[in-house]
Image 1 (cartoon, rainbow, N blue to C red):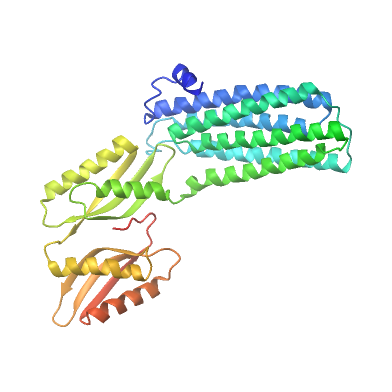
Image 2: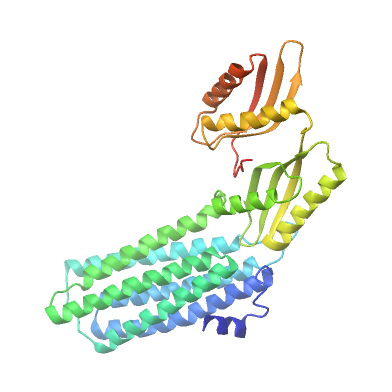
Length: 390
């Protein structure tokens, strides 16, 4: 059904790299969310008022908050689709993250209010009138929310949208909370145990937890979260697959919204190779990432003298030895300057954030001096934002 709806309402649905198509996916998903959640809110509110159940009413208000979230998401996708301008040369894609943050804050506010009313019912419990209409509609809502979870998860993965994937998780949470409300209503009906206030409290806590997680997920890209390790490794392997690339390092990825990533990276190539040929390879890498990954890539060339056996052999040897200190340590940009008494070896060293750089420098000097007493190391420590080893 999801694929049918997408083909019906999203024009050129296969071209997910196109910002306009991606925006159409987001807007359509938001409209579906508004319609379904308003329907669920209306039915649950009627059921809650008939039975006097605070947990059912809480579940209804949760759906109303979901509808409000979809409205904010719709606005976010619309604003995020605006083209770049003079004041915002990287576009307006981060509006999607801001809309997600607003949704999260709305969820937190509603969760606090529901918690207060549920605790009040625990302190002063009142009888809940059992209604098969309410139970029937709650069971139906579980089925609708299951479909919405699968729908948003499918669309979210297709367009790589954290907002829609978070919406799918919220629908999953609704399935769990609504199921708990159904169980509580049945237990109260058949055993006369009043669990309404307790279940309402549990639902409210669940809403608060979901809101907190959503705040974290939406703040991370705004604050500059490190890129996904899988993405970094895939980018590394892709770059290394090009002819003449000896190594790569100093990767930096800037996220200006879903589908709006900018990156820079250093690649090592033989210094003896014709500079025009090396430049052609770099241009091809940049075009490849732009066309197939939607990433605006800037590649910097670091020439490596591969014909000098001494420096090349030493670079390979040292690259292996530094891993004895820590397997995540790497070196790059190594060059040798021969003097009358000493040979100066200059290179950059990428050190993990949890390791003391002075200790690493000391250990490397000890390793090099033990094998080459006439070598002196000039080490520049890098704390790469997404450093990729050779």
